[in-house]
Length: 485
Picture 1 (spheres, one colour):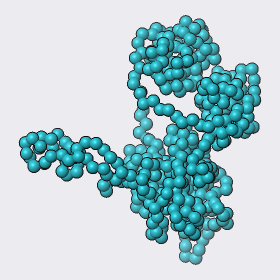
Picture 2 (cartoon, helix red, strand yellow):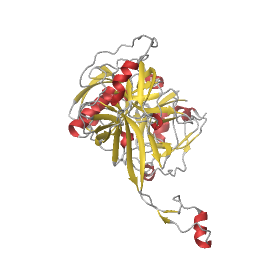
Picture 3 (tube, one colour):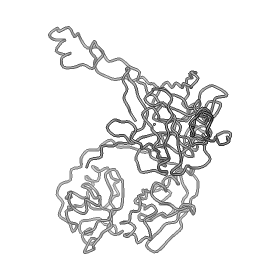
Picture 4 (tube, one colour):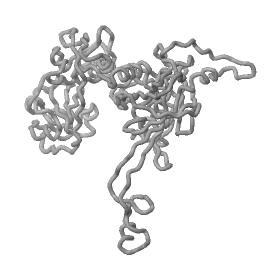
């Protein structure tokens, strides 16, 4: 059944009056107690909200958009009727060149220092040439974008002001079940406070950002809440509201995500100090260890991160790491999954040495890796369908394979040194398809044994009841797949 839900960042964008949704301490403070007052409800967060709400601001950003083409006299895009009007004189008039226009968006932000530093989301101010910050007391400032980090969706702004109200950073990571309040500017209607609980922590693999360690909450978050505050009942900042799982309405469904304050603060400190964020780089592809992979690797439990690719010349290669290694700890701290390993590596600076414990068939081994700078990613926009013809039925039921040649490798955007067999056809009802194998995948190894031809593939598969395949997907993404025959 098709999933009708989508993850969206929660900034609200406006254009010409219409609203469309594109994608939400310096000094410790004593805990603010929730208490009863004479004539007041028995439970109230009002004193805490009154103290911190002034430090949650509204942000409006705008940029000039230049487009090509003609527009009609009414300002709309030219239609066939408008062009016929030019010929037959129906009064519509000739088209005029499209003019540059200003496009705007709204979001929220959190003042975290009394001299004007503000945390928000990158997508709130992305590509903006003007950013305005409005405070609860109606003061308005033009903000400078100090720096941004698209990989975590954090941006740091600065306004020229002093003695501003602030929200203190929370000192401890929230726990599932903790009460949480979300403060922001949903739909641009003005500051709003909603309450819920911390539904989960450490959420990753959502493909919202490159580095994910989200706090999940059911406190209502809606478009315009992006960059706003998620706070605990002590009035401390625990997260920056960023995204929601939205249905057809695009609004709150009780599943919202916030960047933990520890991650946001690490990013902010680097941006304020150097204007950019640098991260450690190991140079290895990783994937989660599933129960099927754990059995194939003969591991005691389905935990850790399996290395699926070692980049030539990378720190991983220089340290002697191998495809098929399963990383179980970093500097003695357990690694639960691929996202956990990715976060651990990224939080180290280039030049740092990290000690990895890896599981191999012969047993555990410790490997020390010296990290380098995270390189910029080159994205190839050619996603054309590869011309996969021919191929023969293989020992794997429902799978046809052929030798990988240079032309096919180029169409699949693979490195010239990739070897294996390419899947030319696959039955959608087969076990291999259910396991995740797809047309266009290049099988590089079977049961950890490299293969370079269909003959080697057939020999390696043999009569085994299950096979461990290392596949290379178009663009160079590699992963292990276990297929039961």
